[in-house]
Length: 401
Image 1 (tube, rainbow, N blue to C red):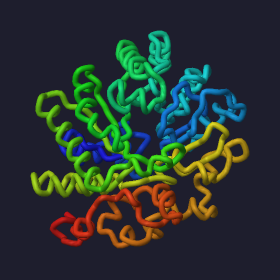
Image 2: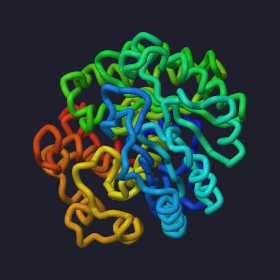
Image 3: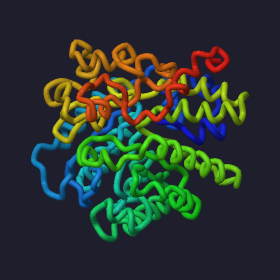
């Protein structure tokens, strides 16, 4: 994640992370990306079932029963292991996690074990009663996915009325006192909706939004041609920065992040270098702490059936199953070749990634996207939009800080 509001508007300073010590167990959620120990935030796709039909779903979710999901007790075993391992956050996802009747019980158990529990949802099932339940169990955050306003969102979600139901879910969460944010996956068809998303943040007083770059996985693998061009990506990131700054200047600051393309970090820094060189030095320091993509290190995934993946998009490669070995043991077993290399991926990337001056900041970007396009997991990420001139700039010691 690249904290646009943190970096560009200065809402978090380098001293904040120093004050907290940069240990993930001590850091508040808004600073976890700067932790130095990098115990993984774990995405648990608790179910493959979903009541919507999103065209870009990485899980190939469907609205039917699947009989291979972890049971409640197996889920508690997983949570016990993760809590003991030191994973700071349990992110419940799907499919649609709220179709599991035991989701509140599982989230409550994670909180009881000292983890922060968050849910990634389409929001359509958050009734007033469910919202109150989630608040009572100590849920930290609800991320609700929208891909634009009603017409665009419902087309992407495959169900008429999904937008209206999601807005009701947002309001119900707010009324219950739960922090809620938006999740938006950028592509050719909805990039013009970005200003409307910021208007929605302002109008509904929503404090947070994550803009996801498209990852070619699941049904999203069929949308490669719908991804933005490099030039259009730059314009979209500039628009996100500008809209973030507009609300900040109005005294209505929002937490704004971009996700799944770590070229955004150097891009924000290079823009800041032109506009405010003094602030740019602080931005670079934070980016170095963030360390870029952390698939297989700072983030991991457990599928509905217990398979362990480097992230939620990498389902074609499993490192093992939590029904057979604890996640913590699987995660630290670097004898598995891919797991070992992901722990030190900067040594293995090829092409312009290998020689890029921003490698320590970007971390080699998204390997699963590189593999999807080239067949080589270590090839350059095709979604990196930095020019050859830009990836060489950091060789100037004046730029390195």
